[in-house]
Length: 329
Image: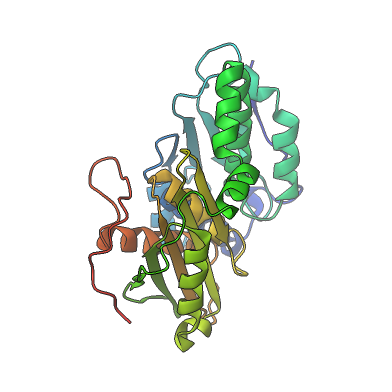
């Protein structure tokens, strides 16, 4: 019995589409795939793999896609995840029809009885994204469903301890008391700036600082926005993670008008286990829409700056919150 299904959008099939529309679909699929690969690079709990990308890129370069072109497919693997019965959760498979995202939605094989029971939620989410790139929100939803399933499988004591250390509400309350990670008002905070990167008329620049409290984050953001060039940027997306004394992590993000950009940056920080660091990416829009590829650029700029500034170690990708580099303005 197959579990492959998908809410097929009403519209033309790949063979009925005009060449211009097929090219647009292929380009959007490639951009979406590259963005996802950048977002989940180095993630030890969730692995994303694509097939068919090389053929799609060649078709774009040639400017003449054929109906025989191999569909792009994605395999999503949840490392170490278990279902309620204690069994490993198989990979989730996505196939992208040639007419996706304009006239079709992805086909999905959930590959697990536990996840297949959540089919209606995934189906509803896919339908809500009809006509748009749907993979990232579906991956986020599936990750939430896997965490729900894992929580059901854990002993009750472990579940309570995990909720105390990771609940956003608890973390915010503890951080607001000024107890853990209290700011050292005499400490001068260095802000490190990356070299600007220009891509199709948009310019991106990353900024980062070692931080240990919300007060220090506010201080850094105030200092950054006092720089006229930064204040004049179209967006200043940011994300941060701070280690608390009780073992929990205080973390948050701000999209600053670039929907979902900040959350993707936070996910990158989580993937490399970066702690006690604030990362901001400024974007100056140049009039050319970049589509989903802008998320890959934003994350790559932020990640590269973390590494260049010495915040990422070779082994384990753990941020040690170093600030030995000289600040650039």
